[in-house]
Length: 387
Length: 93
Image (cartoon, rainbow over all chains, first blue to last red; front, top):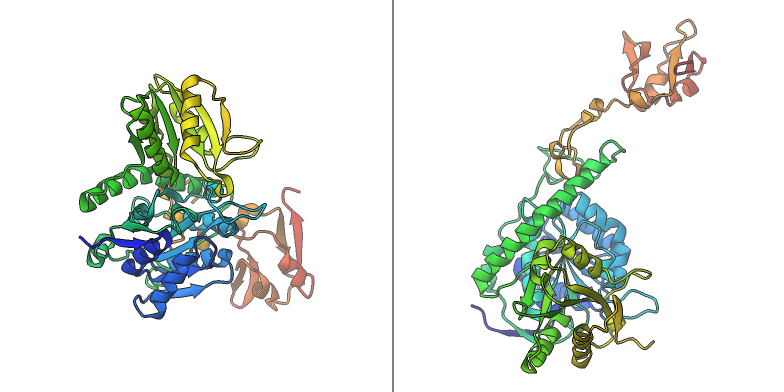
């Protein structure tokens, strides 16, 4: 096993790319992702990788370049955040519709306006319907691990879909943490040689990518993507299991912490999950039967796993670091839907929190547990906003 | 070609067979059909040059009709014909 390194989340992702040595990286810098492509361009300049690195003039172009390179038969990675992801939105659909296994790291950041550079999940949530697999990592170790696993998941022949591995902007992207990388030789073995499907550069088997389809065939192609997404769920699960066996770091699509005998549970994605475990321990020490759930995989959504973790609880709060204005947070309806058919449905409430990088304090999370326990939580609530 | 199921189609809407446009019979789009008056026609073959769907049938270097399986009825042939030998007739009229 390799030595521990002290990196921030962005550096850890750049380091994983260095070990993987993708054929093409096309990107446009945007805070708080910039360190990824900055570090990686240094590896390119130093000749430590032989990646074709393309500085695009925009994120729309960056993703379009990734699509072209991937269709040509290259292993492709890129990274973005916030407005950059929003600017890619149109072409994200094309990447998934062409079944291109592009891997993209997203440093979750709020969307303008007002303009803001700090963490929330609005950017990734805006891309939830684009046919990309979406994973959320909690810390630097998971940023690195998810980045490696994303290539395996995307390139699996049962999936062949693009994968977005998300980490919290600044909280994970810029904070230095210890993490354990894989040895580079092991990474190369783990990721393996890239196997393109019908690459454009294969002149013996000429292929047209991105044709026009009418109302007689569009629907069937969309259905194919949905089926691939469904197939991705067991692939993600087995990839996580296999990774656990290789590294001793055991992950799941949805992870319960002290949930087995818990009456009240809070569920969240990303860095908040770590804060939550601390709060759970605190309240457990006071004798409260509480637990937490970290959701790693948002698309495909693991409905059964979530239902299994949460059914039978007295109360569950779903923490959304994004809001669909005029509705709720985007994770809340998914969790409600997951529990609709459950035998023993908990009282389910939504908390929108942390928008634009608003600090997530432990006393506030204790407050959420208290409101869950005393029944004062409404169906939709806000944590940390002055109203 | 029509009515194939999702699982029978190539992944990602790729077209994996070269030159298969002929399998897609665009003639079903047509609302106007070209008709040629061979008494006026000079066999200049402007229609053959301009037809975007390769639907002008030429035999022994002479214009001899339209391949209606693929003719979309666009009328370019009628517009280009220098002696007005081609006219577009409303389908079903």
